[in-house]
Length: 349
Image (tube, rainbow, N blue to C red; front, side, top):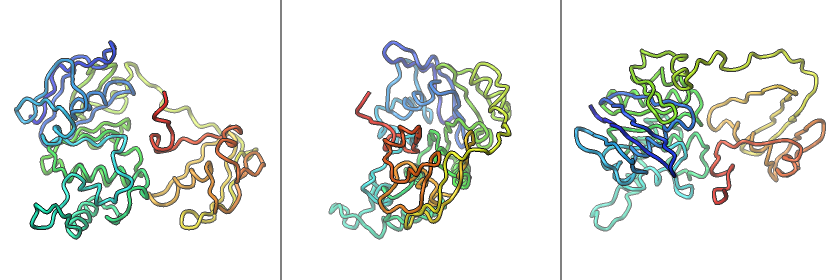
């Protein structure tokens, strides 16, 4: 057994968020951890990753007591954590982020001079392994959220961990990139590396995980092989009740009134001649690979740009040059994919 978690408890300000958590992870398996928001998944993984300490209970890693005092301590013991919130330095290159704690050095090593050729070559190797078409000298600030997620995954692979914790890793990935990730996770499994895979995507969990633990209200309510569950049973364990309808049935609503009209929207090097209509009560999907411009398009519709050409109409009124504040007053909202960087004021309550 690679990892055993026994009777873990954790409370915050008198509120108990984990109660007697027990489960094990074998060597060379993918173990799924599922539950609703607030079930305790992230708290449990923060304990495993050395970010916080449990109130009670213990952990055993490779037949030895495991009590990580910090994330560095966890990594030194062979546990890597890929967070839902990314931990990258935007002012550094991809290569520098990948090897930030372990730069290849020129000989003699005591001079502490970075071997840039070796740094670039090693970075290319790991990026090619993840099927990422990104140059190692690219500043991270220029990457999309999905590309940054993949860089985090590359960092974990470089650490040569025994166990990698994936916390919602596909949130910002396209289906193609998610499939690349699943391929990498399977390769890790075949080489003896275990993974704990946290996700709300039950289909993905059943697809790639060998075993599953279900948390509800801070307690383990189900534990077993993935083959023991189907989608409905996992969701029932998560919610404590059956869920008859995942989404309301689609209604055939007549397309009478255009709410938003986008005409020949262009930004040099980003998007070119984008046109579409969005009708009232309609959900319009915009799809594409990383780098295709879909995220930039969404941002431009809300934020605009000084050299943006084309027109955006809302209820027949030209709003192309309105500020975000003015668009909010009209009832237009923007939910960014990077909530920490663009969606929240972290120094406010």
